[in-house]
Image (cartoon, rainbow over all chains, first blue to last red; front, top):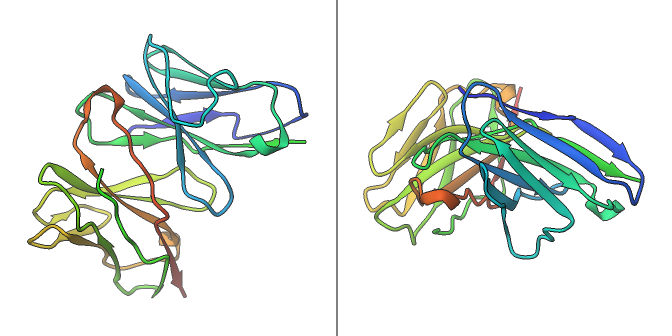
Length: 116
Length: 113
């Protein structure tokens, strides 16, 4: 199946700094990408949906100025956590869909963010 | 999207079939049933999906009741590597540019040696 990669796989940063996470679709063009967050022992929570070349659509309660999403190309989306705080520590997972009617949504391996 | 109800956890012996139930009593006629799984500290993995007919692929079988109010995911010969959280999700196919997969709490399947 299609492959989605994330980089880095884990990152530790200090409180107040910004962290960028990359999500790439390796063998297909992703018209839509999704960003999820998962806290320990909880389910995935959708943060935002982005279409290539458009502004991301954020879920209710997600601060768009804190979680900056850029989907500049059909194979790359980035999530920047700005002014990170310890409560932002979580497992961030991206997902990509090839077309509007594609039933399969491919997930990346996730990025573990720890803010100290 | 219709809500789903799954047992929080299940155990299965290695080599035996694992049958994971899912209730979706409010499913609409145009909603599909999808199954994903998430192995610890990894991203979710697509398993199978169906509308009303039973489906089978190399990973699993999906049995949907005639009234479509429930379904069962079957792993025919469970291995230790099948230990994961299994998510049953119902939604419309496609859904336009803002297609979303909404995850519930899923079922933690533990395959025991």
